[in-house]
Length: 238
Image 1: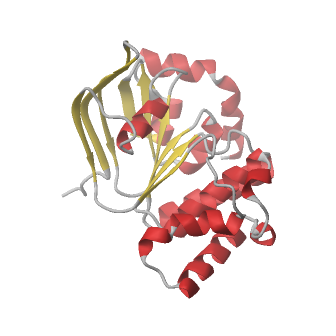
Image 2 (image 1 turned 90 degrees about the vertical axis):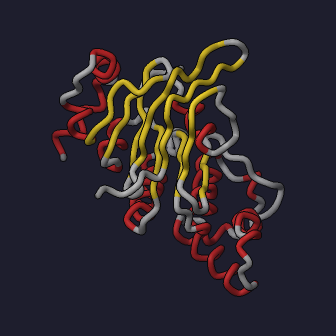
């Protein structure tokens, strides 16, 4: 018997400001590994993450998320006016850790994303890329069962992107279910085992990554992937 999905959306619809965003969306996210949501701008990908996280309530349909801690890394990170270490520690406040345990997790998380030497610096003075790495450090320190990522490397240079991708892959290997929204299809190919293609608030196709990226069945998926042709250069090295 196959494992229950980490996330199941069944016929989820949502309108914002009178405009339909999700239209009877159905989606299953496996309990392990990385699943990527792809599709054109306005397809409803980021809104789907917010519905899963409970930040938006759908107008109809069912949302089921397996029990366990979750972490959400937005495209634009929200930080408090405190040190990098304090920002990570704040995310751990509800876990009941001892001061020593909390300090060890904070130090390990910052070191993991290459920011150990910036632990005492004001987080709000970090560059955009450094702030995004700090957000990933917070998520890693939580050891979540579910990680939601909305374009996590959109503002990062190649070196920082590699750090983030390595961290996401490590978390997935450790048992975290990851749902990734990304327009970087090379990144999707490197990280994801499963891909779902959204169009106009619906899942038009879902399946193994290589099948979806190289042999899409639906005209909507083919049209999106054809419009993103530069990504295919990764295939020569895969």
